[in-house]
Length: 193
View 1 (cartoon, rainbow, N blue to C red):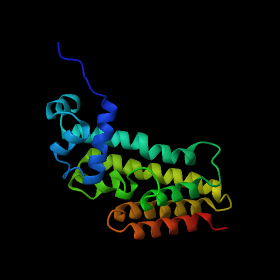
View 2: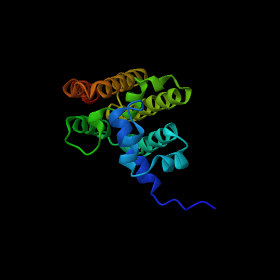
View 3: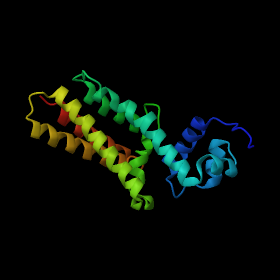
View 4: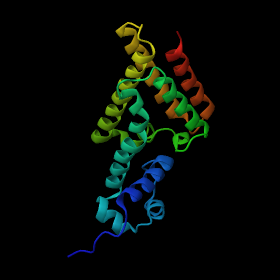
């Protein structure tokens, strides 16, 4: 009979998530993951199978604890007309460093999309699903903010804002001011009357 697990899995995954988010999957060395989680390598392997298993748990945690809470106001009826602007301004503040979170490091999923791990079929699917979820939330927020727009125009605006957000996350580490400029363009586009 094995020893009972003596650590909080959720906290270990959160700590690993920060390492992966800041460094990327390839650069996140096992010693850094051990230091962040407070776990020895054998405990990580026992709980998650391997580094990839820990990464997959970190991605699930990222979606559930970071992405979806931010998107929830855009998807929970009734959607406030201010929700989409609030979402974009929240991203802007996070990248500018005025809000809690690691958004100044971009997006864990978008960072992964630009890595060698992006060729993995499961990773491709998670990233595609995230992009769809983001576009759906933005479409909902835009519909609440700009109900006068024809459906095709609302869809085009949602896709444009999705692209601007992804572009902002892509350059957030290297060029935070450029990332903020993309988010400002998206905000102006959705809030004009």
